[in-house]
Image 1 (cartoon, rainbow, N blue to C red):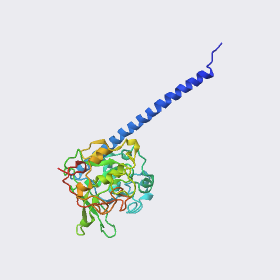
Image 2 (cartoon, one colour):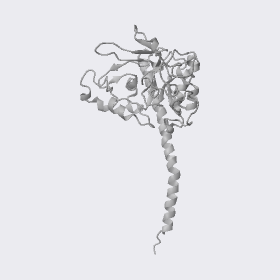
Image 3 (cartoon, helix red, strand yellow):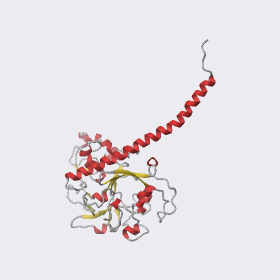
Image 4 (cartoon, rainbow, N blue to C red):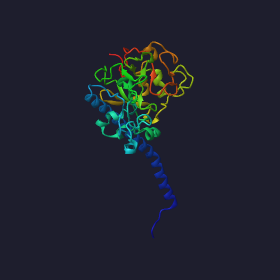
Length: 331
């Protein structure tokens, strides 16, 4: 006589499988997340090396030009002839053929050869921006304060326009950076843009040379709210914090992956990142509200929620001798 499993035995086996699954599935999920974190560091390292190779071909200068180049889109759908029918197709909105700091990945593409390396393994790209402009927002950021940036002239008049040339206070070259192994050139996103926008003092705009000096937005008050929550209306950015949880990407366990000017990359906890940022008082000699040190923006919330424009931050001329090498400051 054949002996069959009893109902009790089957239920016991099912229960054991369920218990093992409950134990192992979180382990598998953690392993998958850990692998994606490692891929994030690898991706940002490759991006940084691509920028170094670019600078090697262009007199040691980081990419910063602005141009209109047909068939240059990162999104392959815009490679079709129908999207490249005129000399300015995709350059003045939508922007899929614009080559500037908001599509900085195009500069490194000849050296990296893969769009996939610009995607963040743990973050969803801004789908609307990708579909409409072929730009990768919500992924990785280029530090415009170190590179500087140029803005395209009007093709009809040749006029560059307001803040057309934002030259880095270091000149935008690799060798000008005091401690390249500590100077951040790239970081994974803490807000939905393609770049860390340059900080400038609009009162310094030269109508003769059409340029302005650009600095990194290094204020600790500004970056604090990129990592932690601050209630609206609070003027002391380090008081009344809602929680100590990182507000942008819980999967990164409280920090961000950074790429440095020497081509290295590593994960940095939020607290250490903020410790590597000067306070407003250290940087511009004043503290307090939006008028103290900023041309515009609210310290605790900053761009874009605090007002101003998305691609520029107002700042007084900072003391670049402060010892904060992550931003290129100090000897």
